[in-house]
Amino acid sequence: MAYVIAEPCIGTKDTACADACPVDCIHPKKGEDGNDTAEQLFIDPVECIDCGACVPVCPVSAIYAADDLPDKWVDFATKNAEHFGR
Image 1 (cartoon, rainbow, N blue to C red):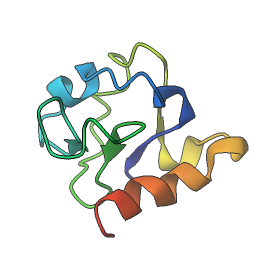
Image 2: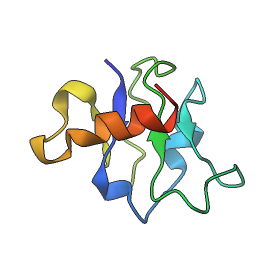
Image 3: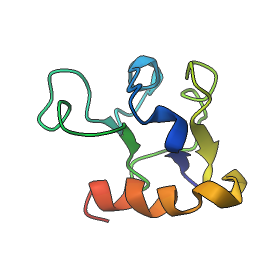
């Protein structure tokens, strides 16, 4: 079960979560291709090791375990996966 970044990240893109990730699965980070045009950050569901290190550092509480996504944001699981071509 991977973690998912949901709607509260849109327009925020704070990279504290990416800095906390031990496997570098949160993108696009500052300076990476696509950071300027992406509305939010995304978690690669294949690379995510389900450690949860990203959750407490997110300033807008946008990160959820896939099984715990609020119903109104379920589509964000697909959006995160599609960002990585999954």
